[in-house]
Image 1 (tube, helix red, strand yellow):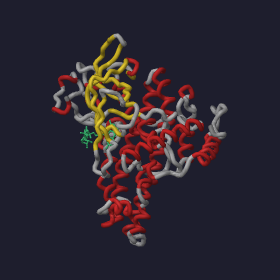
Image 2: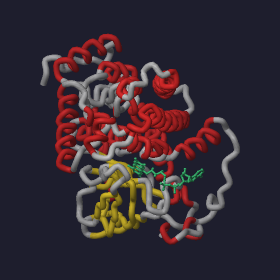
Image 3: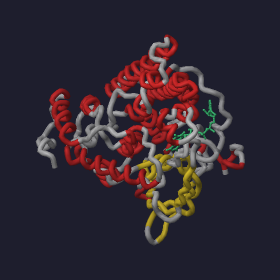
Image 4: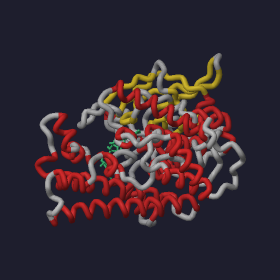
Length: 429
Ligand SMILES: Cc1cc2nc3c(=O)[nH]c(=O)nc-3n(C[C@H](O)[C@H](O)[C@H](O)COP(=O)(O)OP(=O)(O)OC[C@H]3O[C@@H](n4cnc5c(N)ncnc54)[C@H](O)[C@@H]3O)c2cc1C
C-alpha cells in the first residue's frame, strides 16, 4: 500500500484537501493515459485480455491506495465520501491511465443498482469484489426481439425447489451485451409472471456468466470489433439468494437501472477523467486533422473546429450541471435522459466534423493508411452507435417529454393486458 494511502478516518476531509491527496497519489502511482483507455479498441482478443488484466490491476491499485469507490459506503470497502470528492478525483485523473473497462457498466449502472437494491449479503459479496477489481459486471437488458421495449423481456425465470433449496431456472436470450465474453457477472432482467401486464411480471437476477448453460456468441460490428455478445441461457439454475429486489417488481429496479445507465460515465460512482469528450480522446483533434490536410487557414475548416470545440464545452457544462443536480437531489432523476440525448447527438456531429475536415483523406485503403489518417471514415460510418448504445436517443426524447416535461404518454396497446396475451412476432418468443 502506498504511503499516501488514506489510512486514517477521512470522514470530514474537505474536497480541496482530498484533491491535493489525490493529485499526489495519482502522480506517484499512475502512468500517462493510453489510447486504449478511452477508445477501448484492441487489435485482437489477446490484446483485449491483456488490457482487461491491466485494468483489473489498476482497479486494485486504486483500492489499495484508498481511492476506489469514493462514494461507496465504508462498510462495503468504499471511502464513504461525497460525489464532489469523486469529481475532484476525476478532475485530477485527466491525462492519466485509469481502469476504463470498469467505469461503465460495472460501476454504473451495475454497482449503483446493487447498492440500491441488493440485499446486505449481495452487497457484501460483490461491492468489495468490484472495488478490488475482482469482478467485472455487464448488463443484460436487450433481447433479440428489441432493446427499446425493455419491459417486454421474454427471457423467462421459473421458480423451483429441490434438495439444494429454492432456486430459479432461466431460459432465453440476451443480446448486444458488451464484453460478456470475458466478464464475470451479469445483471439480468427476466420475466417471472406472464399473467400480469408487462411491467408487473419482471424480476432481476445476478448471473455468473462463465458457467455451463450460458452460451456466449460474439457479434462482429462494422469496424471489425466483436465486443458485443449474444447469450443463450438454457436451464440455468439461479439460487434464490441471487434474486435482486422483490419477485415481479423488477421494473422498480429496472427504472433506477436505466437512470444509472443514462448517467453512465457522469455517475458519481464512476472513476474516469473528467472534461474530455470521447470524440476528442479517441482520435486526432479537429485542429490536428486540419493541420494534416493543410486546412488550418481555411475559414470553413475554422468554423468546423470552432463548432467541435463548442460541443465539447457545452457537453462538459451540461454534464457538470446534471451531475450537480443529481448529487444534490434537486434534479428530476429522469434528467439523465438529457445527458444521454445531448451526448449522443454531439458525438455524431463531432464524428461528422472530423470527416468533413479530413475530406477525401478520411478513408484509407489499408489499415496502415487508416491509422495514418486517424480513421475518420470508419468513425463516421460508426457514428450512429452513440445514439443507440445505452438506450436510443429516440427513447431519451420520449423520457424527456413524458417524465421531465410532463407531456402526455405515448399510446400503448399492451399496458393493461396480461403479457401472455400481448401479440408478439416470432423473435419475441
Ligand atoms: C455500442 C452498444 C453497446 C450496447 N451494450 C448493451 C449492453 O451492454 N447490454 C444491453 O442489454 N444492451 C446493449 N446495447 C443494446 C442497446 O441498448 C439497444 O440496441 C437499444 O436499446 C435499441 O434496441 P434495438 O437495437 O433492439 O432497437 P429497437 O428497440 O428495435 O428500436 C429500433 C428503432 O426504433 C426506435 N424506437 C423503438 N421504440 C420506440 C418508441 N417507443 N418511440 C420512438 N422510437 C422508438 C428506436 O429508437 C430505434 O431507432 C448496446 C448497443 C450498442 C450500440
